[in-house]
Amino acid sequence: MCRRRSERGGEAPSDDPYALRTSDIKEPPRDLRGTVRRLGPGMILSAAVNAVV
Image (cartoon, rainbow, N blue to C red; front, side):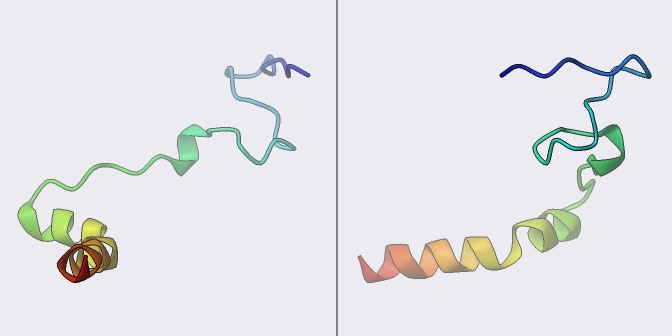
């Protein structure tokens, strides 16, 4: 079933847990430290799995 966007601001209804709201979007990191913080444990985990295989 397709849901329509609400009339106010084009945002999806709040009862949809998969709706993308503009307030949920974060600015991307601007420097290397911010990028490493964002990647963090996921990058270490994937490197560890790759090293074992």
